[in-house]
Length: 485
Ligand SMILES: Cc1ncc(COP(=O)(O)O)c(C=O)c1O
Image 1 (cartoon, rainbow, N blue to C red):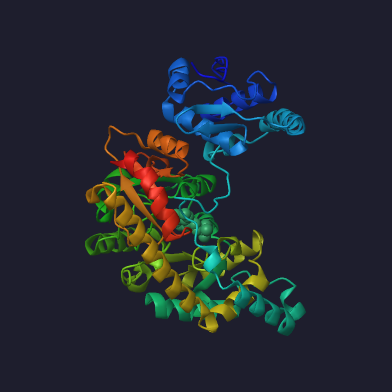
Image 2 (tube, rainbow, N blue to C red):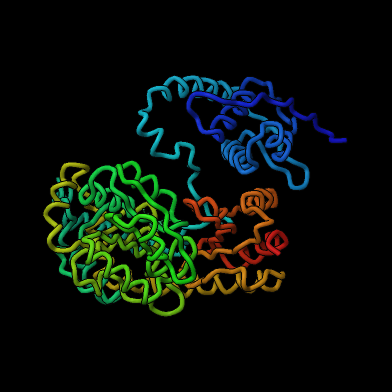
């Protein structure tokens, strides 16, 4: 007999053009705020709710995870999910927000409803096992950054306070061109470097400038979910192209969308699977781009943190047809909130990109750009990357060793050269969202690989290891391993 009362069964929530997951989340939130689900009551199991409502277990798991993020339910290991005690003031505020949000929701454009996943997880990642995509910000040389910032404000002062050039500060464009030549073997003129706020802004800009609305683009399947939304919002029809051990399957892309005008690809370290694009595929991709006049957006995400030697030269370094735009970010190499990234453009495109950027948000933060230029020129970026690679390699080794010690077969573990995370594959009989939900009950946050899928049947977990020390990783691996065996 459970000691806590079981919550009453809720009617199947529907309506308002919400996704099923958002509708379930909202119905539960409403019931908790209105007191129909009292504090301390146990929610029916996700399995039970999925059966009652005839929806997938994954949808219910996702909705419950969102309620957990709101702080209105808590999971207790081995006991179930319980309604948390929410202070009356917070309930009143939530009641107002949900009513107001409902009214506003009706006015969201159909375009947004169609092109975005409005209920994508919105939580800010925090350092816990095994959150992916978060560097170790504690290892960042903050005192040095503070000194460089103070020095820049002292020497450049008000020069940095007005509007800045749309393509970025010349000092940063030059520093970055030198850095890319040394670290990635990519020779480019500073004038080809454009500074943007993020890789996704680079993708958005490229889609707006290069494609007609409704044109098709290949994206790797699985891939970073925001990439799909970014392209969709820019009016591009993204087509998922499978990724295997040799990276993007170019032949499959040609069969699925032969006329695609653009390809987004992460050849150095595919995200999230961690594979590198094989030489034969690189050639095919470049030949196709040259022959068809298609564009390649080469996303060099995490190439600067590759742990086992240098990754292959960027496609942009070998392209002879001027069809490759090379994208990179300082999110992991420096710190995420810096919000600075870059595009290396074929020379012929620079003026157009500058003109379009000037009509959007003008430019990126000039003070941050100036400090970053000094950070690079002083050799600090290269030194920091060296330290981070050593730190992350030790963490990766500790995690893989712990998984091996606790019986996770090596053949389930994907390539782990990619810097900050590793994919662990699961047998089909163990759906990854259910495993992730059970891991959450055991206090371990993992991202199901199926979340990154467009149509691919990937099944596994993405384990980020960069933001935690070896002890924390080993302890979490011990808790997770039984779910992976
Ligand atoms: C392939 C890829 N590119 C880019 C990003 C994010 O880069 P930024 O922070 O510059 O948008 C991610 C984040 O996970 C990613 O997976």
